[in-house]
Image (cartoon, rainbow, N blue to C red; front, side, top):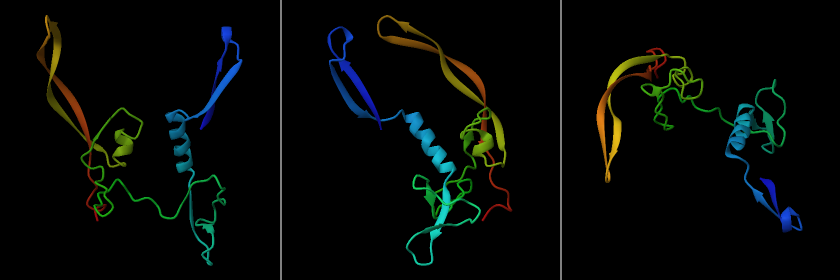
Length: 156
């Protein structure tokens, strides 16, 4: 939360000031949480069951503001219906993106297949008086990229 204020008064003077709490920009909150997630520390209960200790002795002890976790996340690259993961095999990806929708990340290093498909789209649309839009149909060839499945040795 952040404090925002507005001044009220004649000719821009600040004779009365109104302040309120406002949410941070969504992007800043997301970036903050992603940084916390990336720096999260795995912990386990101590022998007495009264506190937490770091699971990996090489990691520093977490602070009160650090994100901690008990169990590692499942491998979402592989289909596992018990945890509700459909895996990424067959999912469409973006060949040019460096983000999570990009083929390099989404396909988990397994590569992707490319298929050229014929798409028919509306184009050259014109508004006709009154209240009608007429379009032509245009043919476009588009490359679709889909993630390959796991190799036989990777399957459960």
